[in-house]
Length: 411
Image (cartoon, rainbow, N blue to C red; front, side, top):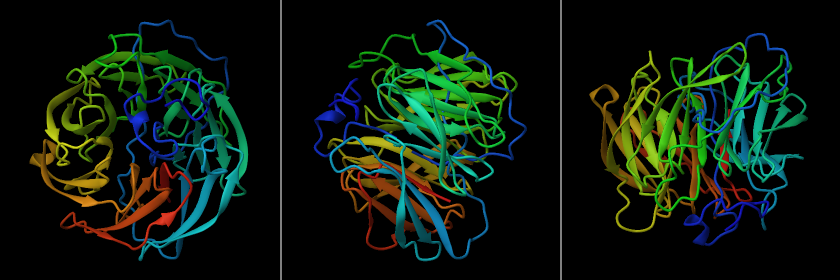
């Protein structure tokens, strides 16, 4: 099945699944420290093929905020160019205590905003435009004004994140297997990209026709950014020059052939991370060296979903580092793991029905007491109460209907 824009092939194996936009991917929360003064804009830097890509979002979904009161904001990403899709970025509020979601409108204009991230200062929202001519868009939240879009220099961007310093936006182009860096100015608007790197090596994994950058995030040390590439079965580590936005590759971590790594999430301690492998339906514990940026991928582990068709999407870890959750597309469940040995081990506990079809992305509320699941094929967002002491999940009620929901970003 082709992309939302009908060009490049986004997912051969997932494309066989039924449902509008089922072959497409995307969203998560971004976190970080207060922004610094923005860099001046300069022409985009170019890279010759041969150096590996960058990473994905800054440590997302690691909530530690106090319990909020009153309605909270929720943004929902969708596809605008598929049948039954949305008209832009969905707007809603949710009750922080009960989890009930209420729709409030749409930010019209952004095309295929399948992944969303917010600036550390909370004033600007960023969205990918998942299409052949990939782009990233900034939206000022105070008046919902679209501040403009910038080319990512690649096709089908499916993930973005804000560097913790607030000065750089990182994006991953799935279709072209490249990652890009854009400057963020003091208003939250984006400048022309400063760097773009294509993952030209190693060779694509079994069944893949080329590189497919799926995530671009900042490691806990802040100086390294990591790019997860499904097509090359590799996680690339880069050092980000926070003055110029340039990327310098420092290491590569290979998964087993055909794993199809999709999403990496760090343990709060910073020494370990957890990798969701989309193609072979596994997860892996990874060791991380904060000084060098080097990631070491451990043995593949079960998702607890049995022998049926399943594509793991995203992992979350609780702020206390005790539990992890995996979204399962196909099995339509959330796998619950106990995190042991200071983050070095995942122990499978059980799976919980997600009450939706094809959970593409999951996110915690800022206080960590609610978990949101965006279910692409059913067009719903499910909400669960999280027992932070036991890791238990309890449904918060009937899922919220939203057209082709592929990303839920609670603030």
